[in-house]
Length: 292
Image (tube, rainbow, N blue to C red; front, side, top):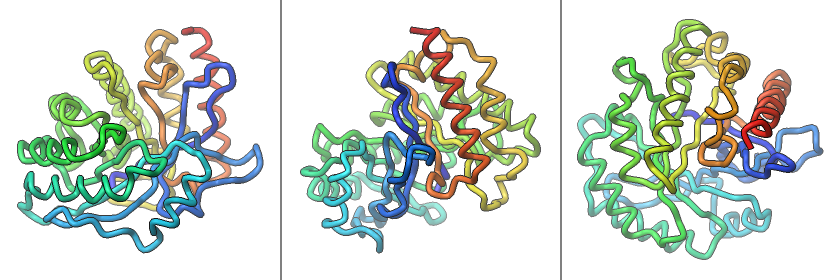
């Protein structure tokens, strides 16, 4: 998946800035003491869907587990995945089929949105528009449709980035984007800082152009290594240092909830990541107070 990661309580006073986390199992969601990471919203893996749009629940999920999860009253997004084979496309009929399955499963639950994590998506291709339209038209109005996308950047590196044009097109097709600001292939922290800064600037501009929609920015806080993820390049410390020069006016969309932050491995945050998360939260709180 385009790893994406989030967490923690709504800020006292503002009650708008929010941080969440992706989870593969309901039992991973923290219910611990105040000094542990606790999400203000969750993205919970519900299942996978086939090329024809048939939905299969994840091994750790059942309708009863969905119901018991909803008893926690945490704002929740259903995370549904599909792995594209080479040259594969998804048809509108598959979108309608998937939408009907999600409607049946989620209509009477606490879930307010569905995130489709379709990989690999190298661009905002035309077949994706018609597929997403079919899903959107079939879902109940109360359930928003979101799309997970790679990091957005003016740079053009095949497989690592979406162009800014891709981001604009995709935002027109769904109710919100979940931008994975990691797995960029950055060689060092300086390069990742530039990528993250460019992505954050563009996300804020995209929000201005699309009233009523929101964007979740996934932050790098997982310990496994991939070909596109270097722990010493992509990490929360670099994210914090990149955010600090932003002015209160610039981060207003973050303060009012139009942009949210998220951690992919919210259930495995290291002690250092938990400490850095608190610093990010404190900086955002203080900066948002100046913007209000």
